[in-house]
Length: 310
Image 1 (tube, rainbow, N blue to C red):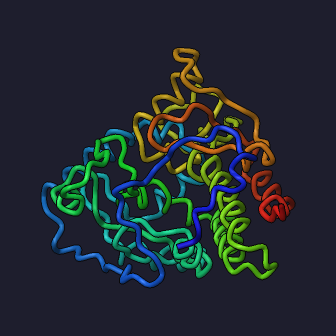
Image 2: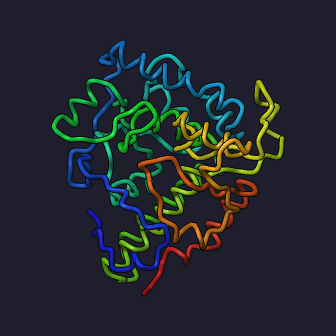
């Protein structure tokens, strides 16, 4: 695993103790591949999936971004049972060159960016609140609730992330982030372990505030793909929001002025890379982009932000 050096943490804002204590983390030397055994999925697991999906289905139809809505419609992701990886992966590969790789759980930074660099997205077939999840973490106390678990599960991976990978521009953006992360880890500039760790944290911050918890201003152009018109100023493109009813509801309430739990901040890449996050609770801020093209161009034009040299 990449060193967890904190030498340069003093440069960050909003430092939080977002620990993953108790979570099984897989690295490049571990047996991390775990093929999905679709015929072993239980009725209870299908019910958990169905309940999670149907709780957010109509909210997403109204508030998710165009890229998500079109991607979801083009993939065999059911709303009432587990999705089958083998039926989804070839469609993504045909559209954008990405494939799914079924993994045993949470991947460390080096392994995650390695598979992304190969245009592979890691997915797990375990789901929150299931006996399999509980057995995996028997003896450990970790959060395992309907709305949240610190280990990404199949609902977050498939329902949250995968529809976006049907969009070529977005898929290229995801690959570029993965390739940059893997490049940082390779340390061709000989920056050393402390700066590798620091620059990876910058990249992780950026990924968190964009493809995990990002918003885009609502122009109204996506309403033709919805059952009901979006009635707030924002669309959702962050997978962490999309896979959490609590997070979606928070965005809507704050946007309508019914809550002041979170603030909406214009996209600022320099601020975002230096702002840490807390994945143990509802986000206290969301960064809002003008358009997806602005997001892509900003990342490509500011790669130097991820190569701090001390």
